[in-house]
Image (tube, rainbow, N blue to C red; front, side, top):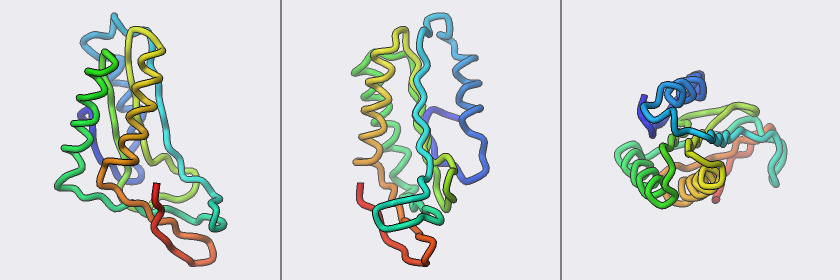
Length: 142
């Protein structure tokens, strides 16, 4: 599966990531597993949301995610990090973004996940369009 990736609706990705955590070569060192899961909200400032649509610049996104991952693993000294984001449409309640960190201690895992989420939203070539129940659509700026 790999530590970074883009997935489509319907893939049960979190369980696959957790299986990799359980089978990690350094699992005996793991004292903390921190998981962030982004989910489509049903309400925004513009109104009731029907779904989100994510567009990804495929030729670039994996390089950006790998660089973010590499820098964060090094910066916080964590054991490993996974970053996966959805591409395509996702209805309210659907999981769209996963960041999972494993480390010896919780503090660096929480900090690593927080930074990874923020950096992906700023740096990754992934664009989000909100589609409202009333039919309006607009691009969301993070």
